[in-house]
Structures are given as structure tokens and as C-alpha cells.
Length: 156
Image 1: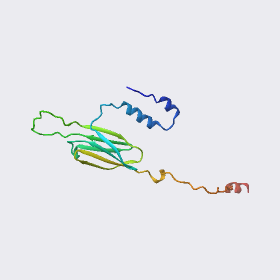
Image 2: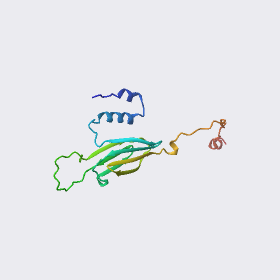
Image 3: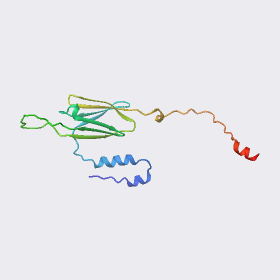
Image 4: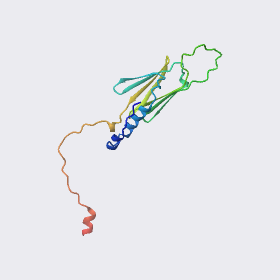
């Protein structure tokens, strides 16, 4: 197992703690976490879609929680009261939890379950105050000295 030591970088780089934490947590994640399978696609300049294969799950069995920079998708299969006797069970019936780290200003727009595929649409909405702005280059304003009114009255 490869472990990366980010401590030399943590000492010299300020403000990148979250990035290093994400990298360390990802390296700790077990490679056996492959259920349910999923796709992540870019559907526009600021739009994304996560598609999970959740055959056998109903909308009531799935819970989607969006927090700041984290999307958690959980599936819990309800107890089936069936008298059927299975000779082979090849369709996964176990519960799952998938976590997706989201960038800043990414929000969940919609979620839909159809034909065994759960699609979650994400949109990145950067606030106007955070968008880059062009600054016009013009003449520099001249600065003037402002006289203190209290100092003038104290001198009198």
C-alpha cells in the first residue's frame, strides 16, 4: 500500500489543509468499495451528473444528503416479506453508502431514479462576488491630506 507523507508540504504551504486531508482520506479508502458502480460525467460547463446503478432499490430505500462540500448517497433495503425460496441470489440486496467530495459552490439540482439508475444532477454556481472581474485601467486619483477638525479646535 502506498502512503504519501504530506508533512513537508504542510509546513511550507498555507491554506491547503483541506486538499491534503482529501488526498490522505482517499488513499485510506478501501479499494473494495466498488458497490454500487457509478459514473461521473460533465454535462455542461458548470453542470455535472452522477449516475449510480441501484437495481432493486425503490426511491423510498435511497437517501441523498448534501452538506457543505459533501454528497452522501445511502441505500437501505427494506425487509422483504416474500415467501419465495431463492436457489441463487445474484442481485445485490445489501445496503450501501457512497460519499462524493464536492467543490465549493456545487449544489444538487435534481435526483431521479429510473430503470435502476439513480441520476443526481449537480450545478456549480459561483456567487457574483467571487467571479473574476476586469478592472479598468485609468488615471490615478490624486490624494489630498484631510485636516483633523479636533486638532484645529484643540490648537485654538
